[in-house]
Image (cartoon, rainbow, N blue to C red):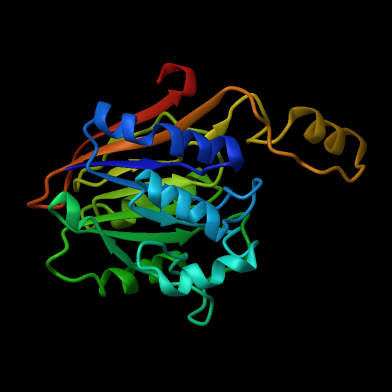
Length: 262
């Protein structure tokens, strides 16, 4: 099995990249399952039902989110009623959404999706390590392939989660910083790991936002609207090859695909 995990989709450039090209990318890279972090899809912050529908129609099988999950209230109904989208598992029980999704029957093997949020330089949340232990105990024993999206700021936090879950999950892949890291590897226990898979959106930017607006706000302290940039659109992510009999990762490949390369 080959899983494509897509990093933070930023604004219209990001989700348009997915909608226009995912079928070609799936075919070219022999991908069986696609999972995407979509928390920045709606003008750079949050997700709407309309964009959710577009991503699923384009071929995304499962969706993870992060700290901007509730920025758009209209997504509450999607979180409550759909089985292929998850909230961070260390969010409160009463927060809208489910903590575990199981997808991938069409690929011949089920895949469990878990999202966790870090605590270093992030909003206060429950312990992600305890939440991981709890949610993994709820994964059916017949489901061997488990992908964890760790939405966190600090690389040390992400490395610790990778080591903590090594041998217990198929992959621990980081999101949130929008900057891809060059540390993809298979850990000793057979878990694929990368601190951050990067973003899917405009790379001629500051983390997906127009450079001029971010520069003005930073240098003058004047409140400025951070609009989503539009140039040099790329898909950032990782492809993980999985042994479906053991749930262990066989390989991980860092992915950065420019729209003009497709």
